[in-house]
Image 1 (cartoon, rainbow, N blue to C red):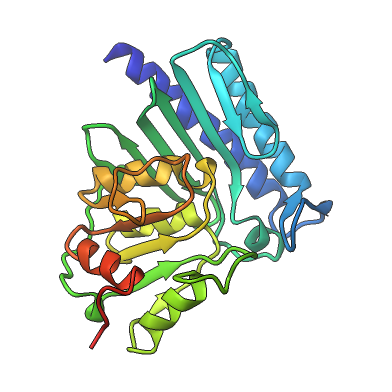
Image 2 (image 1 turned 90 degrees about the vertical axis):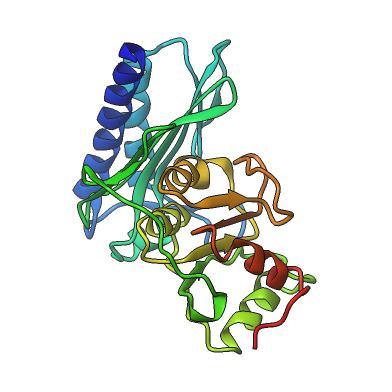
Length: 265
């Protein structure tokens, strides 16, 4: 328990350090470049936040493995791995939209044990420790109680490629919205997951995520009483691309709709 408290302290310090850079640059002037693909932005603030986060982790745990969106893998022979998104929602951030955050998850021997997602613009800190529940600004949170998809409020994201594939993002999206189900797109998967955990959304699905997008958020959903799987209903791993996170009550129905085994009426 003592070690876990130390790890938690480092996690929260790292999240705060990254958030300070988000706050410093937000709505200011900064350099923006484009990575591979369309609208795949990276900003000066992403690099500054990543550097601040990694400095904290390496100071406290120099032997730990780190996986970060911008700098990739810092490979070490360790059972601990820190999975970092210095700014999730970079397009939002670059346009002055306050739906962006720092997201950090910590794995031990392949199991996520700690996760924190912090949006400093909205001053919302989500945190979870495996087996100890989830919180928003130190207040316990739990998923919603809706039991029908038709009465749910959902959130999703769209990749910039393969939109028109069978059961792809546009097809699945159309199945919901043609029946009047509200489906939002916030532009930050980490925040999407946290808002499911807090009961603001009843379900979140996305076709193409990276580990740093979901590592912290999926633990927060599970610890808030929700369910997270891949699109086949299998145990979720942040190292595969497809994710479905719900309050648990609509999970089976969501899977059926995604695979067109059921139609909304």
